[in-house]
Each structure stands twice: as C-alpha cells, then as structure tokens.
Length: 151
Length: 125
Image 1: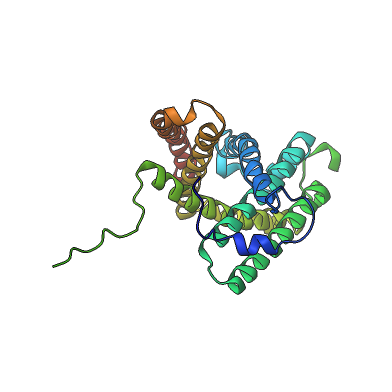
Image 2: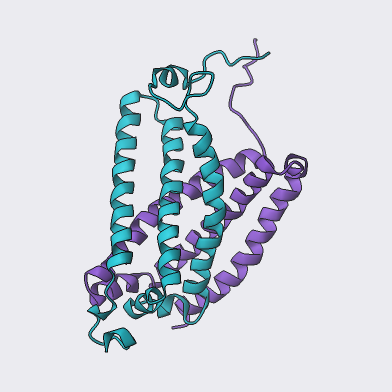
C-alpha cells in the first residue's frame, strides 16, 4: 500500500471538529464539493449557452439589448427562473472554483483566510443583489414601456 | 561535471494544458460574472442608467472582448463535460484523446458561427 508522506491538508483536516465525518475522521465536504462542480457544471452548460444564444445570436444580438429587452424577458416567469438558477449555480460553482485555487496557491494560513473571507463576502453580496433584482424588477420604471402590464 | 538534476516541474501534455486553461478561463468568467450582475442590477436604478452601461457592451473594443469571453465560456463548458465523462463514464479514460479532439471540434463548430454573427452586430452598425 502506498501512502502519501505529508498530505498538505492533513493538519488542517485533523483540526476540523464537528459531525458528518467518515471513518478516517475527515468530513465529506470535499467529496460533495467535487460532485457539486460536476452537477452544477452540467446544468450551467445548458443555462449559460441558452442565455448566450437568446441574448447574442437571436434578433439584433448585442445591439438589441436595453431596458426594454430585459423587461420583455422577465415578463416571462421561465426567464426569471432561468436567470435565478443561472445566478445561483454560476456563483456557487465559481466561488467553489476560486476556493480551490486559493487553497492551491495561497501558502500562508493568514493569506488563505483573508482571500477566502473576501471571496465569500463578494459572493454573498452578488447573489443577494442579483436575487433581489430578479424579484423586485419593475418594468414600468420605464415611462415609455409598451408592455401591457404598464398600461 | 555532475549533470544538473532534471527538475521537478511537471510537464504534462494536453491534459496539463487543458487543466491550466480550465483554471484561467474559470477565473476570467467568474470576474466577468461579478461585473455582469452589477451592470444588470442597474435595471433597478433607472432605464437610462442601465441603457448607458449596456451601451458600453456595444462598443467595438468591448465587442471584441465579448468574443474572448464566449471563447473562454465555450472551452470551459466543453472541457468540463470532458472531465465529467472521464470521471463517470467507464470508457472515458480509454477515449481521452478522442474526447480532447471532441472538445476542439465542438468549440470550433459553435465559436465560428458566433464570431461571424456577433461581429456583424458589433461592426455592422
């Protein structure tokens, strides 16, 4: 049996306290994180490529994007759910990816801690802001709106 | 003269480079996503504020950056699917090479029509 002489995460992993441990005394967090990257990645392929196709390929593409375009899209609950799912999955996927990169390249515990604190703060702000925007969007903010809801 | 040690730098081939590219594109896409949520949030400020900022996306230089963004997204997406197949499909590891070629082919097939259409929009007025 081969054994890794000094796995980098062992001292940190051993310090972890709390439930949800496997037989070796470590949590399964990294396993779930690995699985989440694959599952969310698969969903994001559909969500993001669909988003790019509808916004950049159909109609006037980038030239057609304006407030009215967003209002038209979010008048349809399908696009609200689409964008909400895309926001949450992309942010969790991206945040977890950056967490891995920080763990790989930031050697000092202090540096890791502060980089991850900054990352998680930014992620929470963006997810909360984006979610609020989708749910509180008011198409009639545009006085020239031609949407039927605004008449 | 003792010869210099060979060094310990791992020099993988396609596998290593696709891993490096997956990281670089991932980080790039993540930072764009942060900006993109912030610019979209302007729809809660006013139609004018949103339209003005979205207007910068129609600028030719930014239009070219969008081509780079989509190139990165398409690579990250298909390379990610390749990783999933290698991890979960029993025959995945045996078809490493074919999967890598598949990523390249899919990338070209989706990227070329996108570039033509997008640059027509950006530069076509």
